[in-house]
Length: 136
Image (cartoon, rainbow, N blue to C red):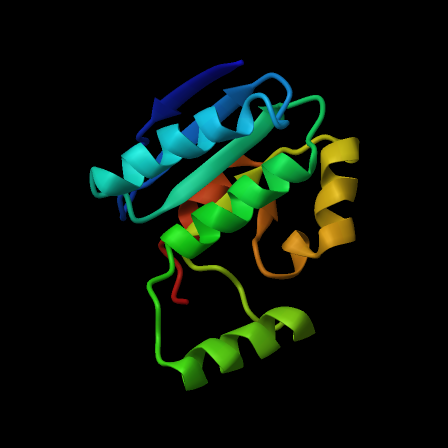
């Protein structure tokens, strides 16, 4: 597995994490550590470029959800309940995490577990970057 990180010029700071290789139990922790390192260094907006991932297991799903949580600070329990409800209903969009170019198999996994209901998935990098500049 190879991971590279870039920081494109944009209105708000964005880190793009490009992953090449299978996203499974053997590699998921490495991806998570790299992404959390970016967050620890101050990254507030992440794009996970999945175009180089031919396969994703439940371990990859776990990492995406962990990154979602890492980028969304805890709120009051009432706000957490409201956000959870909106996520289930498909009316909540994660403001700090976007996904880019998953293949059909990976997209099917994300749809089965419902990630696509609250994390935007893009086919175009520029659109994904620009999504962070739009009001949330």
